[in-house]
Image 1 (cartoon, one colour):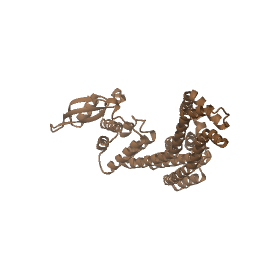
Image 2 (image 1 turned 135 degrees about the horizontal axis):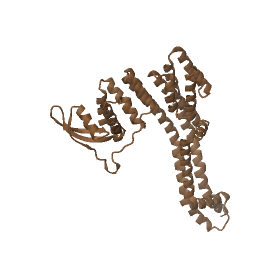
Image 3 (image 1 turned 45 degrees about the horizontal axis):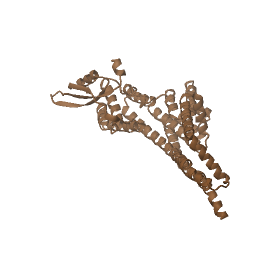
Image 4 (image 1 turned 30 degrees about the vertical axis):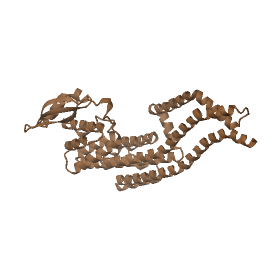
Length: 407
């Protein structure tokens, strides 16, 4: 049985007869044909045919499960449980009705595990790529306390706010990146196709060219001869930095600390980290998770290794009896207002409420920072493009202007 549970869950097509002798058929996710037949018998269905569902040709129908899918499914599951729909039936409804085939397979795999006798948290923990430790810990607390419905509502709210925060930060960073990429493409086209044409024209003048024009022609010649080296070096550099960030803790520290010091962007990411810290801790507190146990999940949710390390250090201090607000002040990463709000929460016994207010405040601060960043970057990017593209155009027309002046 353990070997079966470790196998990858796949979709099966089945046919059979129900308790009244009526012919029925459908699809079900399972680890093996034997396990699927056992599940069907427990549902009082006598299976006559069970076979693996054929894979679609050319990858059709495949779709990646993204955090937004988990967020929407959590809200659907919470709503159905609030309406009195049994858990397994909720899986069936949400699974069959999902537009994403990947998410459909995931839900039906969880349903098959629950039907085979596993708890919901055990079924979720078989899919760590989609359900992190925070999600599983809260579900486990809800199952043990008999408040799974309430926990699912809190989880859904938490995921919705977290995804909204991520979306705002991505939208703030997407615009400048898109413009920079567009500028690189335009400059590349000018260097490879346009400037060489001017170079041939100017070669027939038999006169010295202005310094800017000569510099652009030399740069174009070099670019045409070595463009593949330049782009290869750029690609290798970006790939190397990303890999180093994944594998090297010192590099992670350096990059995460450096980006927090970048004007405007650093302030945005700092506010985002504090908002995630407060929202995650609030959610876990409200679910009854002990503070020390919650800190590991909170650390992973901050999204920055500087705040991750600080939160893990706070966890160690709290385990020895230090108050949360004292350990937060010691890190030097949290504004005084946040520390004071947590201190009031600890004294009044309403720390989850105070953390929720802190999270609301900083999520609004992120909104304002995104608007400010967009407003600031637009003129800067326009000025950058004007200097680069305009400089190239002026440089190419300078010899023509000089000729006109001489004539």
